[in-house]
Length: 110
Length: 115
Image 1: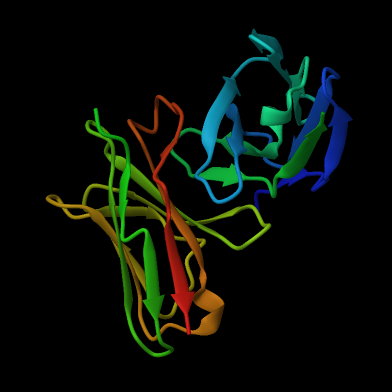
Image 2: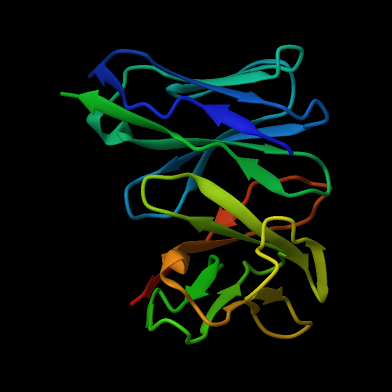
């Protein structure tokens, strides 16, 4: 059974701080990794994807992947109250379904 | 380019009735995924379909649930003889191809309430 694990939170950070969200996965064959943001009552929307080991930066967001440790993280710099949402980690292998973690609830305090 | 369209957005059924949820993927997308989400929980995979084929239905209960993605028309998730435990948000997502492993685009979801 392929599993994706995340801390459910809530993770509370003050406005302007760095929020660090973590995710581990069980399937060593996983090829691609995604972070989705979901506001309460809304559908998930993609923030970032990463395929290769290392860091990938996009604005205030940085995704980090370590395939040897089966670990992927998302850093949010200069956190804003509008970043308060549930962040879902998703893992995919070619030709197979996307497996989502349970999500981490982030609260950015003004 | 219209996004993933789901309908109905809200559906109320009494126990024992049937629920039928529809999903039209984004234009050019031939892969459809259905997920169920309970309040305060993550997305639980149900079924992955391509046109006229079920690729993976490992997350779908063996009884009462079925899904299809016909050559023409939307994908349909059907729940027969609904029970209260079926109350949830059902999200459909589409992608262009399995090789691309591009992002999933989600619909707004269908929220089923079973009375």
